[in-house]
Image (tube, rainbow, N blue to C red; front, side, top):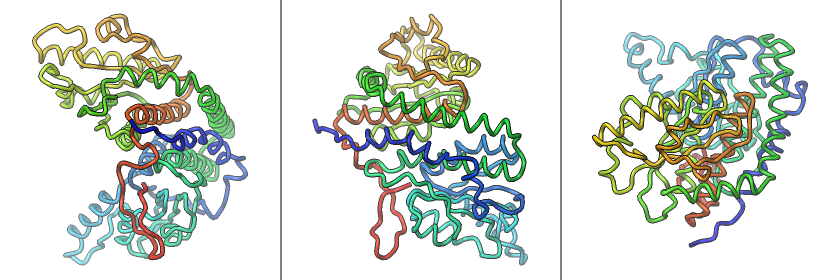
Length: 417
């Protein structure tokens, strides 16, 4: 078994300090050149991979703070919109630009490297006259994307030497939160008291995650024990992992699944626990016919109503699996829990049925608001990915999935999101 180096672990632990550095003071946020002078008709966002995940995380807070939805698109969705507009309007001499894209709109374009090929190609579809007010959110300030848009919001996460878009993903999210708050202040959408509370919450979660990561035994040590209970830790098995949650915590699952796939080469899918009941539940039905059934990992939110929903849906999933097998089963499918210290404990009936012993639950620090829930959850899944990869001997400092990017002629392509 290969021994994993510690670069990824170090970069996971760097994140809280980077978040604090990005927060600064409210006065630092209000940079006129990075905020539109007038309100925008629509707000759009364009990105791939982990950068898109950061935008999808931002979207509900953006809508809450500014009263406008943020339409997050990947390059394929962006180009499809242009293709449909051309198909509908061009034959009659109309515009080949979608009706919701124009100079009166706003556009965030996010890329860690600023060289993501698909993003750069997508931007070429938009004429200069139809281009929205735009800002490039990049970790590399002298990249092609930064030069093309001219207006740059730097992520300033530093060079990532292990799996790309680990620390840069969370720092991008915090940077976007800060920018959205600045926009809300400029447009007088947020009362001062609300702004003060949100900035305090972001500072507090940075400190909380820092303490979490400094306690090696509580974070990495307990996670190593937890992953040893997962059947997927067998490097020779054709393993599959299903991630499920509800409420704001479900927003991190797509990113968590990407990180696990990337670091551990474990096929991972993510669902809302409710939507899983409508079709995908076949993944856990009649697992007796599967040589290696999928492992289901439920992330239990801190908010009681969402935790209750998760437990209710686990019960539903178990009933569906038992009905497919036409027999009672003590554990219809293998499952584990990730939950916060202040989450509701699993009901006794589920504990008995699935054997949710202490070893089969990973307990995260307590949280008291949605922002801390998603940031603590993101870091916990990074620790899980690292620990599982280290246990199975995966080279955690080399990405398992690579993307071709469009780089300068002087620069070779590099993996990135």
